[in-house]
Length: 419
Image 1 (tube, one colour):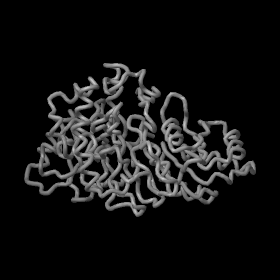
Image 2 (cartoon, rainbow, N blue to C red; image 1 turned 90 degrees about the horizontal axis):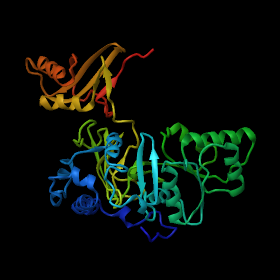
Image 3 (cartoon, rainbow, N blue to C red; image 1 turned 180 degrees about the vertical axis):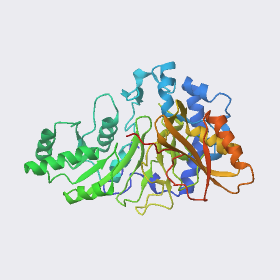
Image 4 (cartoon, rainbow, N blue to C red; image 1 turned 120 degrees about the horizontal axis):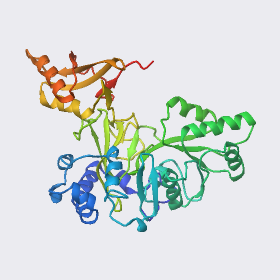
């Protein structure tokens, strides 16, 4: 990625337009080397991959047999082996930046050009060498601002390290330095635009926005356009992976980054779901400094069918659809998505299930709603018994029509009243 494309090219590199079969073959061929590198240079990965034949992990089926490392586990792993849980391949002093994200979770940044691979998202949004970006992510301790800063400078842009807050100064910066693009959260951009309207300040030079870290409803995107912003796109990433996916000018889903393998799995499990079904985003990253193998982000999304009209051929996802961690407390005990998956596993007649919690706190009830290919006599009683065994709680079982459970990634629905 050290050689940038011609500014007129809509694509960041040739990887974006290769045949999907060629991309898949190349990624699978790289997997054994990734596991070998991680095991040889990161003691945490050596422990997690003990007993795994890395050379045999060269297919999605083999990859899916490995355990998922969930973001929710990182805090405990890092506390046991500070600072990064033994998951980095280089010493902290040879990194670029070291961050502390909420959790607390410590995040390393490699000392390489564009270490978060954010340039691809900027390029798709029309950012080109010689432009100016107003970076309104926070620069303090967390990596979001640096993902943008280093990517923009790699492309050859100037960056205004605006950070968050001080709206009047943000407006003055726009009026005076005339940035080509805003990068930050949708909510903060709205505050800037609304204040400029109230005060009559001219922020007309600002024509592009690349937004992240919050949901962007279509109604808000439309509102930004009505205020003079020609291009309003999103990108999606995490502090552990960097860029995961981004929108193009086609506005038809979010396109996966070229350096990742994406799986969508049933929440609470490592089991991949079929394309189109909502589940947890699990990513394998070829980052040489901080490799991630089946990293569960805790975010929900789904794969979209077909290819983007923009000409990029990588997998597309629907974007961020919520959180996968649906753990709920019922009568003093935690109920986890993995327990629902275990109940389904014990009864092959069940095709899908959703645990619905109703009532009020301290006076709640559980109902396992099940889609089934057939309900032989006595099955309901057996499932009810399994619910008690797995959760240590009593719960009712209800048969529902095949395909009637919502495709929203939820396996536990907390429908209790909290008023």
